[in-house]
Image: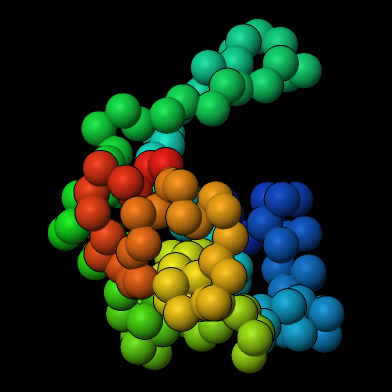
Length: 139
């Protein structure tokens, strides 16, 4: 359903109405929307409000801590829980959520006869998530 804030004779509203009658609009509308989720950043606008050519800086959330066991489990299960909903579907058949890809990489390295040197040094032999909290960031 549409919420129309402008009167029907308003030129902006007329343009929106016209666009929605086009076949192209129906094709785009039927494809759904793309959702991107970013962890550890704050919603902020640090650009100069009077100069549209300036950009905001990326503001990190210092309270975000993904290394705790509970956070690792939550992030690992997040995509499966999201896709279990009728509202969301995977981007493609071969898409893997980043935390799930990280978990798979840990398993492959742990099972490998010749694991990567980085894995050996930084990950402490972790075979899956959740891993030891004080090794999460280095790994």
